[in-house]
View 1 (cartoon, helix red, strand yellow):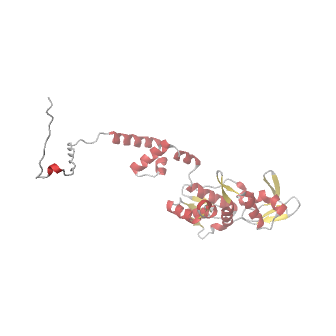
View 2: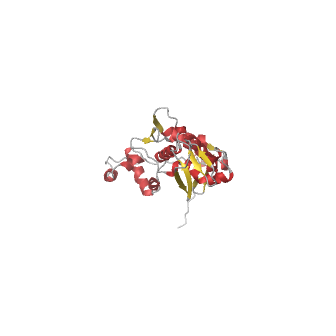
View 3: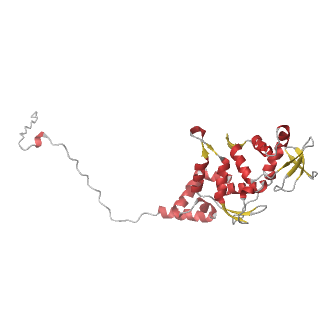
Length: 278
């Protein structure tokens, strides 16, 4: 077998024989060594993320050295060979870095060997996932990102065709598309997050939600002129004078009882002293 193409990662070219992410990748390293990388599956990807996705200064960060080392260790590659192949291992596990597919309006996501219909998970499902995936006590509490993503995936998959397809056996390219789509379905996009942080947007959105029994998504999906009409109608309705009715007399205050005095006794003799000064 000979190399049939070149893969460039981080300005390094690797001669490879590539037949898709569902087949082994054959690689020729600088010293002439021929190695192969077996397909990296969804199950392996989630487990490795759980071990190597750690909290960072700006959220979570992937320990890329440990992650690529795990991809290569299962092929028996260590030391200098593993160091040389590390960038390619990350490329392989990331499905080549190609743009991910996205679900259609009906929620169906087309993958290489199957298609998956996605839905948003519920708040209850998310809370259950957090309860199962947070480990440790006190300051040592940590979210197992791999298990959390797996729980989100399980809750979000509504249907799979062909039925019975094992999603944990998907190759790297399909895995990345599936996980990216699941996260996009369940986590507000950056532009939506900006809406959520605006006090004016929050006030308008919550007002319409309260008055109409809508969700924020329903408010934001409504045509802007229609939202303007709704707000003007609400202003008119709430600004109208209340119906007039007969005045209700204010309740008369009830005098507070005072403690009995000696002068109140029926046999008491009261001597009143008056000032006769002219």
